[in-house]
Length: 222
Length: 160
Image 1: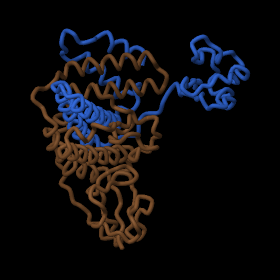
Image 2: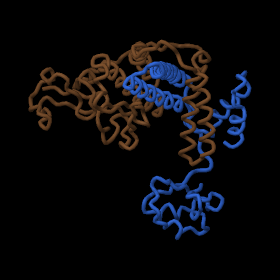
Image 3: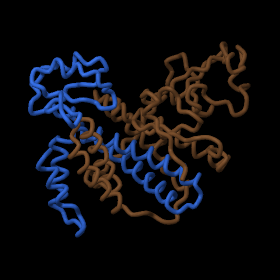
């Protein structure tokens, strides 16, 4: 009997136990789970699960650290400057500094307008970027942070990588089902980490950052 | 260190009014008067049955130091997330289909939140930090379009 862990929320599927409450009897093999089975905790599809490897044979991935001149990397785009300012606005709000919060918000909106709107883009244009993030950027960043004491950076990477995997599966599901994916249900975004959830009601807590559901906002259809 | 009231949690039990030695908690705006508040006193914090009052530092410690290597790795990811936000915004703007717009909005918001978090960890956690001030100053010192809100940046530099 094997066990599989959801890479998003940490839920463990144990073949020996099944999920009797959902009609999956004990002893149900991973391959024999019904088609379309999703994580009971966070609705991630099966591809998001990893088999629990008991031996410490977890292969250590060697990642080539790409070195680029920092200047080249750090020139902020308009969208990034907008994101920097919208986050600083929140930081001021948390400190009850309303005036500063509003000013950063104005700057954020200014940079957002300056970024303009691209033309002729489709959802499929996201795929290469997501693939590159998951296959190159996160592994590289993780290997850099692994050797440091910087748990703040590690946290941002852990949350971001999970959310990116979720976005990948959301786009895969949309490819397959098109508008029927959302037609009779809702889509929500966690205001803290960006976790995206498709379903009538969001989970009690965000499976990625664990914030209570009051911080998981429904995205309106208009 | 002064007390602040979270309006979303305050249930108007008014015990903070009873215990405050200076009357700082009793104001017409619903917020505690920082000028009257005694630094570190915390009587209202402990008295509040709905845990709606907390203390905010006047001076914060600097953010934990970041290595150049980590900062660069975070920047590379924030670039990608911002690019994805822009693609999502373009899809949202060009579609007449409410469901497509809804999905694009969700994806754009998600990417914005990830970029915010990455940039925060790259050294911009605290709004009143030297890093943020340097960023604002660099905006003033570089060439900007005519519509750049100089006054907003100058005001921020003054009051942060």
